[in-house]
Structure formats: C-alpha cells, structure tokens
Image 1 (cartoon, helix red, strand yellow):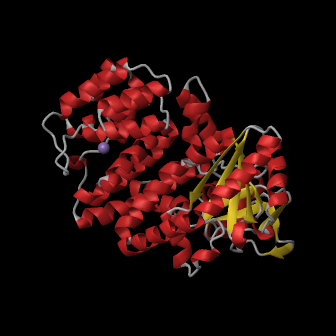
Image 2 (image 1 turned 90 degrees about the horizontal axis):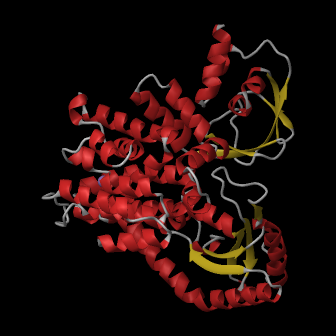
Image 3 (image 1 turned 180 degrees about the vertical axis):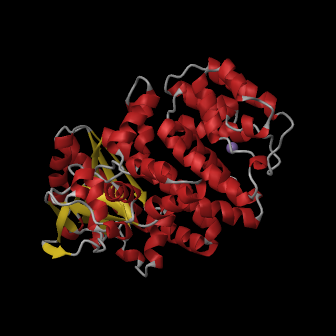
Length: 474
Ligand code: MN
C-alpha cells in the first residue's frame, strides 16, 4: 500500500486530493524516524487506516483524521496545530481517538477504564471517531503477528468483546466480520485453522451448485426485466465457530452458504421471493422478513432458506441496492448514499434509528465514574442480548436477565411508571419474570400509585433504574 493507492481510491468516489495530500505530508513529517514492530516506517499504519476508511467512502475530513490519527498520541503535534492546518472537526476527531496519557492515572486499570469510556462515549458527539477507531483496530489486528503472544491475546479479546460489538451495533457488517475472524485467529488458533479448511471445502464442493443457481435466478429476473445483481458468501469463520461450540454440526448451519439477490425496488424483493420459491422449494422454518421488521441495527432484507441442488440448503437474502449498502456497511453507508453534512446525517440517524443509542447515552449519564460506566456497558450492551416482541410486533433488544419492568421503561417513562400487569405469550407473569428471546410481551398500564421501591432490584437497564429512583424518592 502506497499513497498513490489511497489517492486512486478517494478519486474513485470524487474526493479532492489537495487536503488529503497535505494530511499525508504532515503525518509523514511528524512520524519521521518512527517504526512499527514489523520494521516498516510508521506512516504505513495511518496510511492503511485511511485506506480502510476510503474503502467505506468516508468524507474528506475523516480521511484526513485517519491519516493524522496518531499524531497527538505519538508525536509533538498539538490539537491546535491540526485545527489551524485543517479545521476544528478534524482536530476533534483526532483528539477523540487519542488515548489519555499515562501520567494522569495512578494505575493501568484506571487509564484503561478512562480510555474505554472516552472512545465509547465519543459516539454521542461524532460517530466518525469510533469508525476511525474501528479502522485503526482493524489494521492493528491485520498486523498483529508482530506483537508478543500476550499482547496478541489481549488485543484479540478486547477486539471481540468491545470493537466487534460496536461495529455490529452500527451495522458495519464487513468491519465486524473481519474483526471477529482475526480475533478468533489469535484466541483459538486451532479452531480457526480447522474452520478455515472446512469453509474452503464447502466452497469447493458447492461451487457448481451455486453457479447454476445464480445463473437460473438471474435468467428468471432478466426475463421479467428486473434490474438485478447476484453474489454469494460462505458464513464467516467466527459465525461458524459460534455454531460449532454450541454442538451444532456444520451441515445444520442453515445459512452456511448465502446468496444475495439485489434488485432495484422493495416491491420487486417480494416478487423475486415468489420467483425463487417457485424454482426452489422453501425450507419453511427459516423465512424472515427483515424488510417490514428490520433488525435493531437497521439491517433489512428478506431471508429464506431453500432446497438447492442435491437437497443442499442455501440461504437466499433478497434486498434492494440501498438495503444492500446498509446491510454491508450500516451507518457508514451514509457516506455513500447521502450528500450534505455527513456528521449531522449520521448523528441524526443514530439517534432515531439505532436502538443501542438511547441506553448508551443513559449509561453515560448515570455512571458516577469510569469503572461504573465500563461495568454497566458490559452488562447492558456488550453482554448477551435478548430480542422480544412488543404487542404490536416491534422487536426490542434488551440485556439478558431483563424483566417486563425494563421493557416498560424502554417503551417510555409513562408506561414504566404505570405498569400494572404483564402478559407474556398471552399468559400473565410476575413483574420480575426473566424475559426470553421471542417472547411476545403485552404491557398493561393503569393509573397506579407508581413504581414500587423494590422494582429497582428487578431491573437491568440504567434508564429504568433512574426513573424508578426519581419517582420513589419524590
Ligand atoms: Mn493507530
């Protein structure tokens, strides 16, 4: 990777090179004489980070910040200088990914907690900061072989438990998959090798079958003059790993091979579904409509699993071109599909459409110190989630162990305060019932005397806790 590769990439989507050149020269100058553990000049790292961002079609300021991202941490350059040479937003982004200095803390643990909080809560100001951080982490993971074994395991663990989760929350599928797979490579090398081989075999064995399916479906769509694009993927190493450690067999993974069928309009997704099912019988147990009911990270598509050639199960994902962008890149897709003030567009979207945002904000508001913030994040957003249905069919993600009280407050404060009775799958349950994925939950409210004091012991989420406290202390 050289600077010319980055230039070529940014020109491919219409960015001007002038300021990006300037950022590159500045980073090169400041990092002069610094080397990575691989022996390469340090500048190769920010260059690669900027390249990952350019692949996502990031805006000019973000590419500049990507190139400059290690200046404040590793050189004498100051935030003011970056603001002066570029603009305050670039300076803010670089500052956002910069770790707080060791000397401000009495222990390594304190420093770690403060930095974790800093990077996660940057999402509220400018989500591009965390995207730069994800690109930074991705390049570091790609080059992890040069670190000590201890560092490898440490980084891989943090990547899996924090950064891959955040990538998932913002819907950045490609980033998430690569971060997960690279983490597994260092955490469970044996598994990683074994699954990689299995993946390769699946690919080899099914190539003809997939080719034929793609050809057949494409011909059908062309005949009906529906603009289309078809591609396929084998499930990621980490995705397969999660099935295997639960004792599933490889052949039972229903989305091991997934074919993406991309068309131009929503209506045509449903029509294409009919065409696919007419040709390949559906395995009815596995149909999902994420178009009318998107995932909590805004992923939308139709999922069906069909009997392909030789009875082999193949998943078919049907989406529009825009859905394909969102399902591949999540929030970062907005760099590509919307013009205007990208920071504002992304923040606005995050606030209105992505479910993790509200709890994140609440955890930040409630935490009395960095340790509390990180622990609550681990419990509420980074740990296992359950997905339940409200009585009108909305899907809500909640931390494992949540009760109907958590749900009521997630819906809104009034529902929480007036919660009277709860039906789960049509049967009344106590208020401290532990919800499970796929539960259908009906909340019945009444003008009550408000939440009981002991409810506070029965909730997992920060928002519910705060509202109960506020009410009962009044
Ligand atoms: Mn870096």
